[in-house]
Amino acid sequence: MRILFMGTPEFAVASLRRLVEDGHTICGVYTQPDKPKNRGHKLAFSPVKEYALTKELPVFQPQSLRSEEAAAQVRELAPELIVVAAYGKLLPEEILETPPKGSINVHSSLLPKYRGAAPINWAILNGETETGVSIMYMAKELDAGDVILQKSTAIGPREDAQALTERLAALGADALSETVRVLESGMAERRPQDHSLHTYAPMLDKKLSPVDWSRSAHEINCQIRGLIPWPCATTDIIDGKPMKLFASEETGETTKILPGVIIAAGKMGIEVACGDGKILRLTEIQANGGKRMAAAAYLLGHPIQG
Image (cartoon, rainbow, N blue to C red):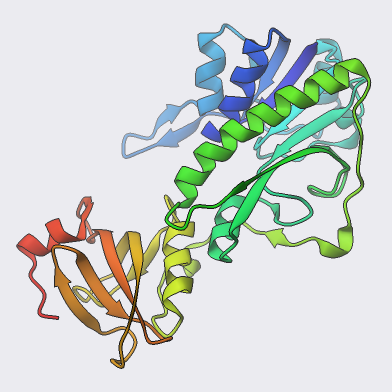
């Protein structure tokens, strides 16, 4: 099939790679414009652009799709199908309706739950035990189109958002491959979403970072896992300055010590009392201006009396 692909981050690369491996003709790859990166502000390619160039695919990086020029360019490429995966721009209806087989989206949640920009993070933040991917027809309203196919997966109790993103990228590629096959055969079903059940997954913000130790150990553990790799949960109870938290464990042990108090610090990590009387063990941290490391390694140079 002749496919126009639109995507930007690493999550989208798996879907584009699968389309290429399945032998489809990729008539164009749309991705976000190059952006300055790090201290040198050197322009960096998106992961999708990097992969597309290795396969000599034509790359397009318009600032906006809301122009007649953009619509005309898509018509000129003459795709049979548009596939979108975390592109980062809204598509006008004129472009959505261009390909005869429609425009579909690879979304990392079990719609109608978690529509929006950060579905993987919010599934973990909210303590979900299951998530998945949805392949849907795109509609004017965000992530509200009819669903063609879904695949679900359990969320591991220690799995963070970065690890889950990698797994869902692969699962999304599998679901996309299967969906394109049924679209080619003309046998694709479309199931309207129950809009009354929809939930929203907004963009992440640094305001989500500070840990409130009056919450339960489970809620804080979900916060730490859900905010990886950005913006990360933070706490100042260890050295008085905001410190990033990258990994933790629910010990299952209880205490009567006040929330936010460090109970023990050693080879296992840093154990902190939480609001439900449970103990959370911090196992991987990053001090302000320092490197990400095991909590035990940090304690070698910064001993704490628990």
